[in-house]
Length: 433
Image (cartoon, rainbow, N blue to C red):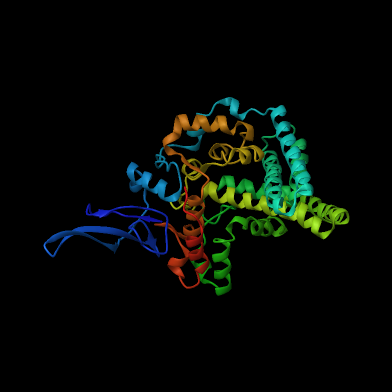
């Protein structure tokens, strides 16, 4: 994404991209259109006219982000409530961590097991609602049940970070069981997720979302089409691809990890071999689709959405290992996003995400207290948003191919004819913030 420096005669705006420049507030193919107003003499009368000009663009850079007015424009454009200032180079991750209260690191067994109760009870309620709902209310029942299932993932997530219990065997058992309804292998995910925290927003090394390489995009017409759909309209379910690619191939793990990986895979395959036939035996194939598959798809919608919102925006860079800085990546490269309260409760505040990247040892039930401390001490550096259409539209239509200067280049700037799905999203997705 690029922003510009223009003469005062041009009325500057930096809104979300659109396929047409209709009012001076849209961009086309990465070039922004600005309204240029003037007074003409027509028939003895002074008439105000306007024309659209294609503006030269400059990449986002720290000096631009230092400008408070530009950050406000970018915030409105991208669907954020705040885009933070660049973190000074002399600030370390330890500096940030040392400002957090000691109590946010404390494990509370009662609160931990309360989260388990909330997830089990809300998931059971969802299954009950699914069994009783008429067909036209099933989407609501699936939305509730899938969101509750996401809570299971967050419990396993705490276990993997050793922030659920002081007993590590309990954490391994609870984490494995919590992941089973999602057919997610616990240990493979834990190993890869640890790398995500160690290499957040580092090109190639980060195991979560990262930009597409230009060479990869150009390598094959078939792969190009898959990437356009995967990073475009199918992006809210791309975690399914991530789940398949990263967690079932033993070659992706170090020798000392393989034994634990095999145990987790055996648990997942046992659940499939026993659980699925039981569901089909009791409810039929339609029941399997109704009670398991559709909530699982809702879970992956949240898994994909949460993950991409946490670290993806036009102004958040991915950097090579020699340029990467831990404090800048974890504090300035992570987004705090507010979701509707019922989602926050069922998902155990996983989207209060910045403190989790300052220290993964903070239990989920202490994330809000930790975030409050970060706001008090580092508030001007934080990226914050409320979940909205414009935010999703920005990510899905702009954040595609890696570029060192501009951070991201949209697919249609490189391959406009092949990028009809991206153009469709720009036209179809609402622009509400």
